[in-house]
Length: 543
Image 1 (cartoon, rainbow, N blue to C red):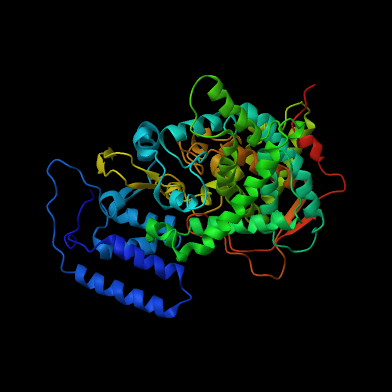
Image 2: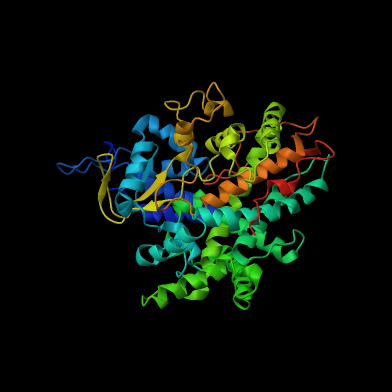
C-alpha cells in the first residue's frame, strides 16, 4: 500500500482508465476515437474529485507517492516521454523510493543504490519475478519454454544455461571474443566504403550487432545486404520499440494484447521469431559441424540432454534454445547498437579524447605480450573511463526491466504489495547530484585519479545492466562488444561531425525506456596508411 494524499480514495477503476488510454496511444490515426477516449477519461476524472480518504492500517509504513486516478494517470502519462528524467523530478517530492497506484497494479520506483541492492540482491527471492506487460506481449507469439522471462523452476533451468554460457568468463574469453573479433573486420570494411563522407551509422551498427549475436547463437555470420536479414532487423527493431513503448507498457491492460489493436505487433513478432527459429533448425540439422558445435543452439541441446541423462526432468525441450536466442536478440542487439551510437556521437565532439585513447592503445599494443587488449583493459583506463561515462549518461535501459514482487514484503522499511512492479531508475542514480559532481557534463576524467588510475569504486556505481540474479544475462557479451569495437574504431579512424551541419543534440532521445539518440550523420576518416592491425586485437589462439 502507498501513502494517501488527502484528496484521493474510492477512485474509479484504474484498469478502465488505463485501457482507454492505451487505445489512444495505439490508434492515434483515428481522431474520432481519440476524442471519444479523452471525453470518457475527463468524465471519469471529474468523478474522482469527489473521492474521500481511506484510513491507513495501523503499524504499516506506506510508500509515499501519488494515488487516485487523477494523480496516478498524470504521473503515468508523464513517464511516456523520458520516463527516467520525469521520475527523477518526482523524487524531489516523494523521495528516492516511492510508489504509483495501489495494490497489485502498483509501481515502485527506486532511485537509491542501497534500496536497489536490498530489493534485487538481498531480497532477490521476493523481488525477482518477471511478468507484467513485456512478458505478456512476447508470449502472445513465443512459447514459455526457454524464455528468460520465466519464473520459478523454468527460470532456474534457463538461468543455469546462461551461467554456463554467456555469463561464464571462459565462454566469454573464447567463443564471445572470437565472434566479436571475426565480425569487426566486416564492420570496418563497411565503414571503409563510407570513409570521408557523412553517413548515418545506425544501420551499420545494427547489422554489426546482429552479426555478432548470429555467430554466437548459430555459429555463422550474416551478409549486411541480405534482404531476409534486413527484414529481420527491421521487424526486431519494431518489436523492441513497441514492446518498450511506455504508452503501451504503462497504460495497456494485458487483455488487449491479443486484440486487433496489436495485430501489427504480433505480425512483426511472429516474423522475427520465425527467422530465429528457422536458423536454429538449420543448426539442429547439422549439430556435428565444427563451426556450429559451440553455438548457443548446440550447447542448449547438450545442456538439456545433460539434465535428462542425470535422471532429472527438464522443463524445456532440447530444441527450445531458439527462444533464449530470440530473447537475447530482443534484449541486446538494439541496446548495444544504441551504446555504440552514443559513443560515436560523444567522441565525435571531442577529438582530444580520441587522441588520448589512441595514444593509450598504441602504448599497450607496442609493449608486446600475448594477451588480448580486452584482457589487458586494466592498462587502458582512459578507454574504460570513456565507456563508463557514456554508460553513466546514457544507460542502455534507463528504467531497467521491471521486476515483479512475488509476495507482500518490504523495501527500505516500506510495505510493498504482492504483484507490484519495481522499476529501477538507473539513469536517475547515474545522474544524482548527491553522488556525481555536475552529472550532466560529459567528463570521463571523473573516473580517473590524479595519477590516471581508474577509480574502481566509482566504476561500480555505473550499473547499466542492473544488479542481482535478474541482471542482464548478456552483460558480458555487451561489454566485450562495446570495448573491442571502440578500440578497433579508434585505432583505425578519426571520427568527426560534418562541417556546416547543425550539431546533434546530446540530450535528445527518441525513446523512453531505452535511450536512442536522434538520427545523426558522422564522418569516419582513416588516420594512417597502416593502422593497428585488426588481427592484433583478436584473442591469441592456442594449439
